[in-house]
Image 1 (cartoon, rainbow, N blue to C red):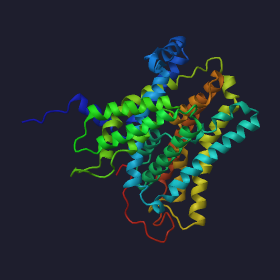
Image 2 (cartoon, rainbow, N blue to C red):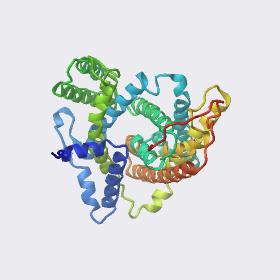
Image 3 (cartoon, rainbow, N blue to C red):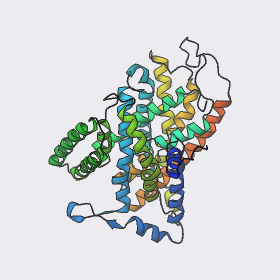
Image 4 (cartoon, rainbow, N blue to C red):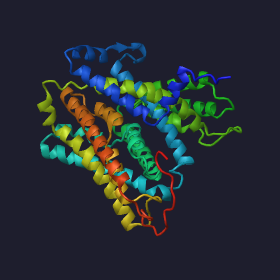
Length: 414
């Protein structure tokens, strides 16, 4: 008797759960948007992004581009919140000493790009572009991990843990930046409402049975109240993720953060992120290539995402491992951090979001977005080449120089 073949839905879900799938869909969506936005039919693309839907009575009459940035991207940030909660409680961030090097590398990988962006913009005479200082601080987890999964085969698996820890801390810092620096006209009553809904959500998500008919409406209410509070609505996703238990409860075999991540990640990588990329990456540069290439903002973004990330991540790691008692994980050497630092320069999703929050002027925003796309692509290509070179090089028995032989360690793709 033959075994029935998996359904189309099951096969699609399995494909979307792969580490490489999200990056592939993001790239496809961005290419379609860029092509359309620079074609003879570009006016139709911009008309689509500016189409307004939603009830004006409750201030939700937003255009599709804002629905993608404020609404759909909250799903992605929910996944980020779930991953953060899991890593802090039971994962790579549980022991600060073990996570110290990638955590400090993440701080350096945000501070240096921001400083370099500011310096370049000031030198270029683009003082009106300084509001975008946070654009090159972000790292796109989906893209970075996808490139590492495909081209880092044979390298120690601990390298993936380092990148994941760094990217998670990077996201936490990026969320903090968005909440602090990109909030305006705060409405305390709405924020109190968010707290009340989060308490209700925490109660519901810890019950014996998880009920979508309860959790989804509570999540939507929390998002709406956050949207009205003056804090960027995507922060609600992170806070909701923090409410989910990171340990098994009620005799379950897996943590609810893991369980919900598997469910929500499919929607995030298969729909929310590609749609956001489609509405955000469509930068029209036809007839404006010269202006974009000479823009101080573009120079600052490229310098920050490519050069700034290398100096920040690799430089911080070198200093920390040289002058403190902290060291890299078994099997990882400082040379492995060159490709990793390049991968952290793939800003894409969060960098595009911060660009939209930073600039209201069409020219500045176009320059910032074009630079994010170009710099992310450059960082991805250089990171991929560096990974393959690193994977081909011989490795010694004590890569992290801690005096303990590395032994036979699990490998990426092994």
